[in-house]
Image 1: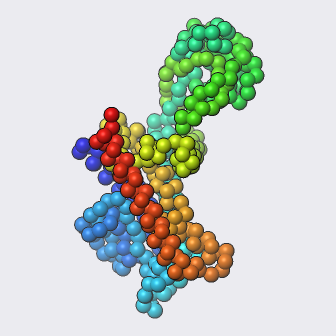
Image 2: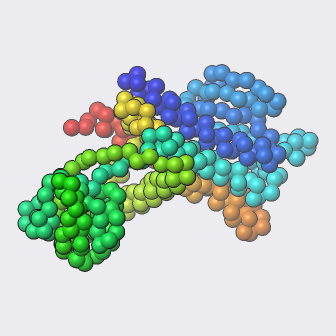
Image 3: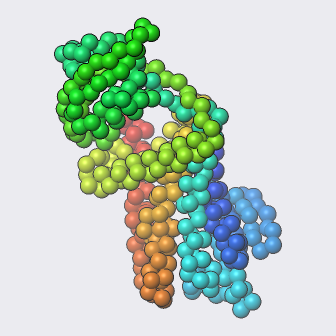
Length: 357
């Protein structure tokens, strides 16, 4: 339990710090005064004031904030602070300052994955056959356990996932599969068959298959700095796409929000589990959460960064700010929705923690 607490404090602390650092650095870059930079909410535990900025750590670690001079249109500010007021900056500068928080979460994830790929390499599942289903296309073609697939229709095969993607892309056409057995090269003709299988979301989907499963052998492929960067960018894109698809399917009811939506308790449990698995696994989990936090804050919900971005985008297009009363009502509605979502996530956490089979 203590490991989970330590792990979640580290994860949330780092993610919140980088998110707020994005807002802070861009605010200072555009000449906006920052009154407070806080990790956490509530009473201040420790802090130091430098210039007009109060840097502090607060009691409740589930968030953080940067308070800027003239942050809200209705704020009363001294005339001499107008040059450093957030509200008095051009709308495009305000939009960039707000956008910087989520973007820094994506930058952090890319940096973490880059470091992991650079120093540990990319985890590759070798295209080695583990089992061959009886009477399957591969069985009829004479494939056996331990065969190493090296190419399909002249296309080199580098990994198990790569092999599966090539088979799918060929759309049921005949395949000439090159493989190595006992040190000798062989080629076999295979016609894949279409089957209905479960995808990542538990949905029935049609796929072309040859009837083999992986032996599970893996290795780490060394990458140079440029390869590591592009792999990191691809990993962040993949997580973002998967997260958006998952949210969409929860809204549609295709997958269960009860089973897939977790809150702080679930995050703490997972953080502890990955912490015990070792540094690479723990850092990968942190990067995954950083992407999730960045995406969550981009949702066009008032009180989140995405809501402010929406208001500023409307202002940029219309040439005038959104009516203050409209913004206040929208923020109240957004806060209510956010509290309902948090309550549901807490409920799921508690049910899983105390009533799971």
